[in-house]
Image 1 (cartoon, rainbow, N blue to C red):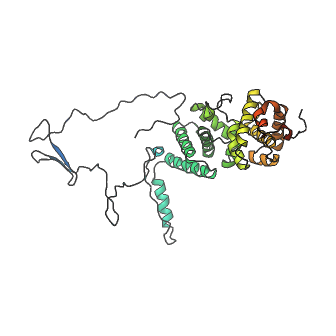
Image 2: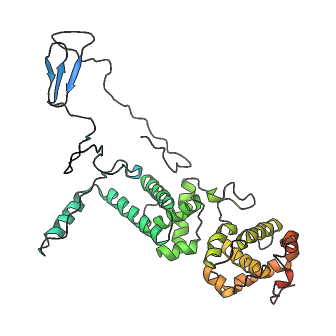
Image 3: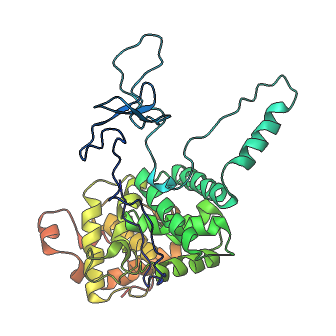
Length: 351
C-alpha cells in the first residue's frame, strides 16, 4: 500500500532523476522440448519445482513459495488464517519491524545483559536507533500529557520528516520532539501553550521557539490549526476560545459558561479590546468576567492556577472588558435572566 508523504517541504529540493532498470517483460519462458508459444508452466510449491504441464519436463527447482503462510502452529489445528507478526507500520517503512527480546533471567551471570548489548548494536544503523528512541519519547510524553494517539502519530510523522531532511541538525532531540508535539497539537485542534510544552519536556522556551520556527518555515505550517476556523484570528496562532474547554473543565464550571465566554472573546476581538494580549491572558480574564456575569463564583487565584498566568494579568484583562461591558454582553442574556451587569465587581482602575 502506497502512502502519500506527510508534511511536504514548502520548497521541494530538485533531485536528479536516476535511470531505473527492470526485468524485460518481452522475454517468455517456454519448454525447450515442446516449444509451445503458449506454454503451460506449473509451479509445484510442495516440491519446489517448475514443471511443464504438457510434457512433464522440470524447468527449474528450488522455487520459493511466495504465497501466504496460512498455517497455524497451535496445539489444535483449526481454521485460523492468521499471519506472523503485527500489521506493518507506515512510520517504520524501510526499517526492520520485527524485534527480538532477550530474557533477563540468566542466573546472575550477566550473560543476558551482554547479549542485549550485542543485539542492540546489531539492530539497524545509528540513525534508525535514534529514530526509534525519539518515537518512544514522543509516545511517553503524549501519555504523560494525556494527548490522544492521533497527536502522537502526527508528531512522529513530523519528526521523521525533519530527520530525513536534516532540518534541525545540531539541535537536541528533546527540543525537536517538543516542537513536533506543539505543532501536532495545533494540527489536531488540541492547542497547548508554549509554557505547558516547556513544563512537560523541560526544554527552554528559546530553543523550543527556534525549532518551531524552523519547522514552520520548512513545511509551510503557517496556517496551523486555526486556518478557516476563526476569520479574525491571525493565522498560525491559537485563539483564546480554543483554550476555554480545557480551562472550564479544570475549573469545574457548568456547560453554559464556555459558549458565553467564547462569544464574549470573539466580540471583544471584533471591537479591538485587549489586542496584543496573549491568548492565555485573554482566556483567563474572559473566564473571570463570565463567572461574575453569570453568578458562578470563581476566585482569581483559582483561574490563575489553571491558566498559568498571574492574578494581575487576569485583573487587567477583566478591567478592559469591564470598561466596554455593555458592548460585550448580549441583551438576550440579560432578558433571559442568565446575566446581570450588576454582578460584575468594580476593580480598581476601572472606569
